[in-house]
Image (cartoon, rainbow over all chains, first blue to last red; front, top):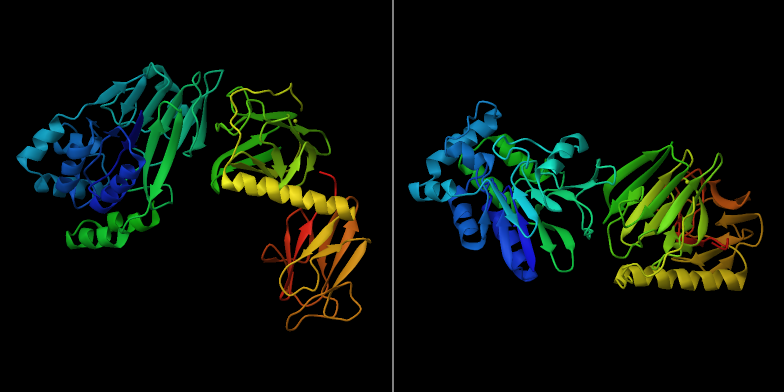
Length: 242
Length: 232
C-alpha cells in the first residue's frame, strides 16, 4: 500500500493542482490531508472541494479551527488575521459544515497523523527542534507520526537513548524497529527556502518515505492574491519559500 | 572538533560536530551518523580521528565508500573531502577524531543499481586502470589540449603558453608560465604564477591550492582533469 500525505495547502489552488497531478502519476491508494487547507491563499473553497474529492482522511488545522471560531486569532500575525477574516467571508455554509467534520487526529496501521503535535492536537504547538520533539514521542504508540503546521520538512528519529535526532526532510527508508516524527512540509506555502510545493509519499510494503517537490505557477497565484487584496507579505513569500 | 556535513540530493540534511575519536556510519540508529537508505550497509564505514588526521575506513560495505569519487577501503581525509555513501554525500572539515568495526555481511542492504552509482563505479574503475598503467598521478586532457593523458612524472610541472613548458595551454592574456603543479609531501598542489584569474580549480580562480582526485583544472581556455595516483 502506498499513500500520499499532504498538508498546509493554504488556499493555493495552483500548488494543490500541481501536486495532485504528481500524485496521480505515483498511483497511490489513498491521500491523507493533515490540515490547513485554507488560510493565507485566495482559493479556499476550490481547495476544500478538491481535498474533499481526493483525500480519504482530512484533519483539522488551526486555520480551519479559527474559521469555525473555536480558536481566537489574537496571537496571529496581522497578515494571518486579515487573511483569516477574508477566508471566513469566502466560505459557504456547506464548506463550513465540511470543515467541522475534519478529525483532530487519525491513526492508521500503526501510523499517527496530526496537524501540529500529538501532545495536544488542539493546542497547535510547533515541533521544530529535538527539544520540542522529545515529549511528542511519548504521545503516539506506533512507529511513525506524520505532522505538518511548521511548513518545514523534517525528520526526527528516536535514538537508542530515547533522544531525538533531527534531519532535514529527505527520502529515507524507515527501519521497523525505530520511531520517527516526520514533518511533511507544506503544499501551498513552503518555508524552507524552496518555493516548490511539498508533499510526502509513503510506501508501506517497501518501507520507503519520499519527499516530493513540485513546481507550479507561482506568478499566477501571486496575481490572484494581489487582485483579492490579500496582504503583500503573503504574496511575496511564495516566490522565495520563506 | 571535526564537522561532517551530510547532504542528500545536494541539500544539507544534518551537520555533525564532534569531539569523538570514532564516528560510525551506517543505516541503523546505533550509528553516530545514521543514513537510512537501503543502499547503505548497517555498519557501512567509520571515521577514526587521531591527533593528526582523520581516516575514513570502509567496513567491507556492499556498495562501497568513495572519497572524491574514488573507491576506498581506508583513506586519510583532507578538508572539504567528499565521502559518498549510497545516495548521501558527507563533507569533512577538520579538527580530528574516529575507528573500525566488525564485518559486514548481507544484512538487508540492497545493491545500488542507480544510474549515478553505476557511473561512479565505472569512472572509478577506468581511472584506477589508468593510474595503474602510468604508475602515478595524471592529467586527463579536456578542451584545447594536445593530449588525452599526461603522466605527472616529476615534482614540478609547468603549464602555460611558452614553448618550453611541460603542458601547453591556450587562451588570450595567458602568461608564458601561467601555473605549475608542485609535489608537496604526498600531495600535489596547483600554483598560479601568471595573470590572476586565469588559473582555476572547479571554476574558482586560485593562487595556491591542493589538488584532489577529480578536480577540474582550467588554465585559460584549456582544461585538464586531475586523477590522483595514490593507490586509494
